Image 1 (cartoon, one colour):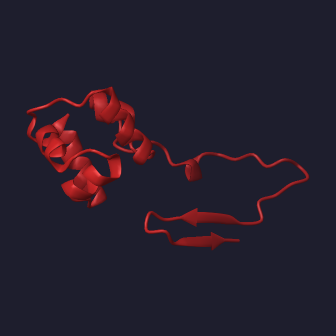
Image 2: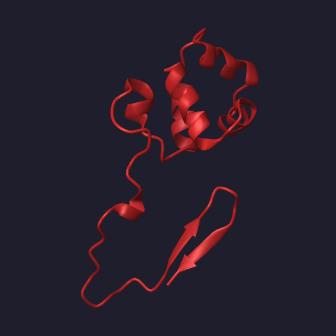
Length: 101
């Protein structure tokens, strides 16, 4: 799992320190996970999945499938006959957003 965590940090361009802060564990605990010294328990895995909802839990835990889950934006939406989508807001991790009309 340490190799998958390293790959995820690289893909997200996140430092070990930032990752530790985001999931609420110490920098040393992250270092131990990434070196393979310690294996993450349920609590740490659930913190990772909650903080990074696009990350595939199956990939993280088992190594199968893709790193990221399907984006909700790529799923088919069937509008109701009398309703239509007038705008979509996209929120980014840096706090900014964009509007699509």
